[in-house]
Structures are given as structure tokens and as C-alpha cells.
Length: 199
Image (spheres, rainbow, N blue to C red):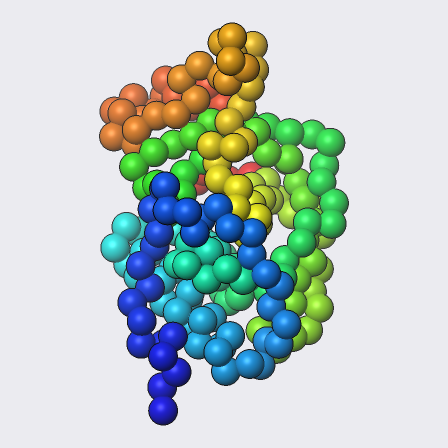
């Protein structure tokens, strides 16, 4: 019999859904049939998004309403789940970037991230893994996804800089994707890094 979770459509929750603000619980048993079904749902959600939009490197379980600490990734070096991921080291150096998200695909948000991180996690067989001092592209991605596990969105990381107004929030820190794509050179000048530019 197919587990009920495997039959449910994996709809990506959109900005404003309160489930995106929940702090997720650790996965206790990577071999539990219920967890395995949820893992398959998350992987299918990532595949469906990539097929529809032509991009998408990762998705966190809370984005499809599962309040557990795991992420599906599709990277050149690894395709699968990161279970109970935790950042174990952060570089002192930071950078600014335009961040996007499957939960608000029409927006970019200017945020500041650590230039490099190290991450520990369990793989799908339950084996402990460590990725040390990751490149910028992978580091920013995993900072974004691990934030999701803690109910944190890009809007909580908006870059406050010299252009900040009285409220302490950087001016023009949110832009519609359509506006960005009409004049990408203008927006690229406002940050250190743009997704897709490499490390």
C-alpha cells in the first residue's frame, strides 16, 4: 500500500502562509516509512519546480508543509536529501546578494550572507556527513534553506547598509523579478554577487 503522504500533491507554500514560520523538528529515524514518503514528496516538489521554471537548486521541507529538518538539493556534486543539517562554521567575511525563493518566485530580496560555511548533516542512509568551507554559491544556498527550517525568510535578512532609512532597512531592498530582468545591470551593481554568477 502506498503511504498517504506519497499521494498528496506537493504544493509549494507561498509567502504569508503561517507554516513557513514554524520551527521544524529534527528527523529521528531516517528509515521510518513516513519520513521516507515525505522525503520522496520533497524531491518530487523540487523536480516539478525545476521542470516548470528551469531553475531551482534546493527546497526545504517546511516549504511543502512538513515541519521537519531536511532539505532536498540538486547540485552538480550531490542530488538527494540533507537531513538535520546544521551550520558548524561561518566565515567572518560576508557579501550582499539578491536572494530569491520558491515561496515568493516573483521577488528578489537583497540580503547579506556569510561568504563560506561548513555544514554537518545525515545522508539518506543515516550516515553523518560534513561539508567544510563550501564555495560561495553552495554556502548562500544552504544558509537560505537552513533558515527555512527555523522559520526564517529572506525578508528577515534584508541588508541594512549606508542607504538604510530611519527604520534601519536598506532602501529598495525588494524588487519584482520582472523589474530586475528589465535592467539586470542596474541591480547587479547594488550587490557583490548574483545567483548564477558562480563563486
